[in-house]
Amino acid sequence: MGAVSGCASRSGEAAYSHPGPEGGVVASLPYRVDGRVYYPLSDSSGFSQEGTASWYGRDFHGKRTSNDEVYDMNALTAAHKTLPFNTRVQITHQESGKSVIVRINDRGPFVGDRVIDLSYGAARKLGIIEKGTAPVTLRVLGQKSSSLRRRAAGRLTRRGNFAVQVGVFANPANARMVSRRFPHSRIQPVQQNDRKIYKVLVGNFSNYKTALGHMDQIRLRGFDKAFIVISP
Image 1 (cartoon, rainbow, N blue to C red):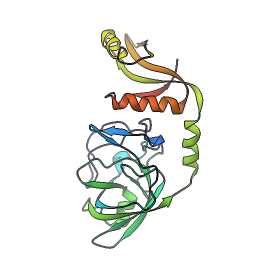
Image 2 (cartoon, rainbow, N blue to C red):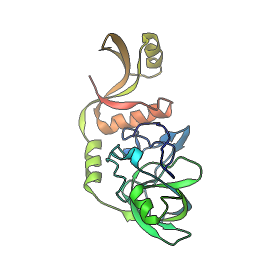
Image 3 (spheres, one colour):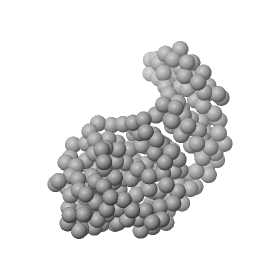
């Protein structure tokens, strides 16, 4: 999903959006949201946690999750800030004793003391749709091997010519000012309808993983909307 969007409209849905698939988190690199840097775990063995669960649904249905899946609000998935993607987690409602097993495929929640953001389907099984939030206990069961993990690994080793687009500017002076902040950067003028815009691109990387690492560093420097493009 994109970097920031409007508030969700349904009860219990968090008023934020998750970092997009180009946000560096696919490779479990650090990422930043609202000025705070999060460091995904490389090993979740024995992980447990208590806190508040929320849920998100229709406003995000069909959009991309942080691991580049298409979000299905009815699937048993969830967003967590640091657990590795495809981690299977048992979520237990501390008051009712109900539990559900979900797979982590997104990042969040970034609201208050919430520790996990459940899909609509998972929240329904846990019985928290109406109230919106609930005190829960998380217990990691392991990681699920899937074609999605293999596809993500394949993408990281993909070779080609990649660059990181830092930003797009209407004013060439602004583009030059930003370009000066990054070694090996260049400005690419592009005609868009009846006006010219200026893209600031960094690098010419031969594989996606290297580009991803540079993009993460650029985002940490404040350019949160930087993303990877095919190098012209």
